[in-house]
Amino acid sequence: MRPTRLPLIAGNWKMNTTVADARALASALASNLNGVPDVEVLLCPPFISLTTVGNEIAGTSLKLGAQNLHPEPKGAFTGEVSPTMLSSLCDYVVIGHSERRTHFGEDDAFVNSKVHAALAHDIIPILCVGETLAQREFNTTGEVLTRQTTLGFKDLSPDADFVVAYEPIWAIGTGKAASASDAEQAISLIRQTISQQLGDNAAEKTRILYGGSVKSSNITDFISSPQIDGALVGGASLDPNDFSGIVTATSQFRPG
Image 1 (cartoon, rainbow, N blue to C red):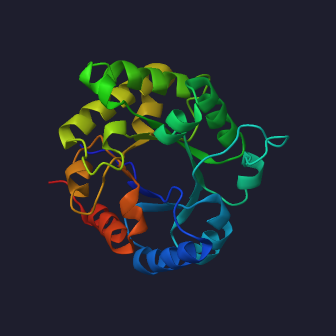
Image 2 (cartoon, rainbow, N blue to C red):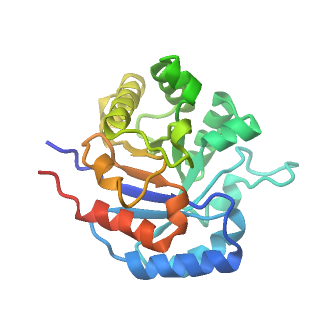
């Protein structure tokens, strides 16, 4: 039987859009996607546009998320944004994205501190995990995913509400998505790791997304797997037609 986890389609806009662009994109998506059944829709704009996008989607079914946070509630951390600042704005926050790990040196311990900070401020963390091309070629994908998941959720309560996004780094922004079978295998391992660490109930309720060159033309390949609960979408989330197509396809999909 297919699990009853509600699919989640999250758009990560990364460092794109001006405030005016973000307003226009959010307005178009709110018009296209408000009330779409059987799928949760999440928009993650840059920090400077959180309030603007939040205002555009207010009163709709769309949710708002941040792309990052600092684990401390306040302090001398110039340029950072704390969970205290975000708690009144956001429903979700993306944590441990490969671009944060690669370009900004965030290790598993720091990622774990962010997960705890988000949960302490009633923000649902989306923990990103994934292997590089070199790790894939050396057949260490399983080791990488197990380590990132285990350390990312260290000392977490089994009752915590969180999401995982499996994003193979070699597929992000390259136009080359993982095969559905590869994604399913990786996500099954992540779910097994959660089960061993936090228990079967936590593993069963946790939504695990696929991310990496997701488009409206390939989303059905992924959501047809009972292990994959949606997608974290990058480039296609900036195109209202393509992103709307991803959401609509997810909403309309029914397993045979």
